[in-house]
Length: 65
Image (cartoon, rainbow, N blue to C red; front, side, top):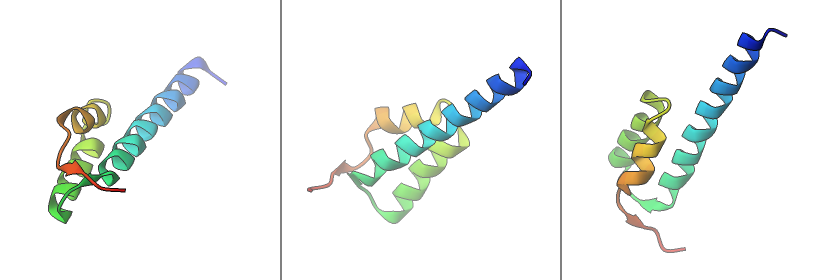
């Protein structure tokens, strides 16, 4: 397998994993449906920077377990 293909696959897997982590982080926050959709779209629309922005901004309040 060419190195370029492997690097692209690793990049895609990393981007998907980061978006997945951001969505799980948002599940633990108390947000309205529209706020959840907005922050989820930020995490997905900005592939590399989006998840960092979502977690760093700490939207909403912690949900009681």
